[in-house]
Amino acid sequence: MSKIEKHVDQLKDKATEVKHRTEEKLSEVAHDLKHGASDLKENVEKKIDSLKK
Image: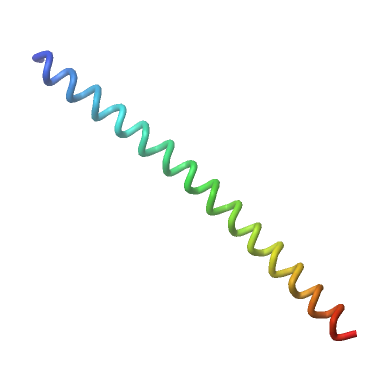
């Protein structure tokens, strides 16, 4: 394998690694956002209930 082919393979491996890390991070962020939205909804509902009383 030529030097260029080896370098291309290394770059492909690095790109795949970055892609996987990015997907993991996006999954974590989506999970956090979902919980944050759920907490916000709950807090708004509590506030509405307290204002009705």
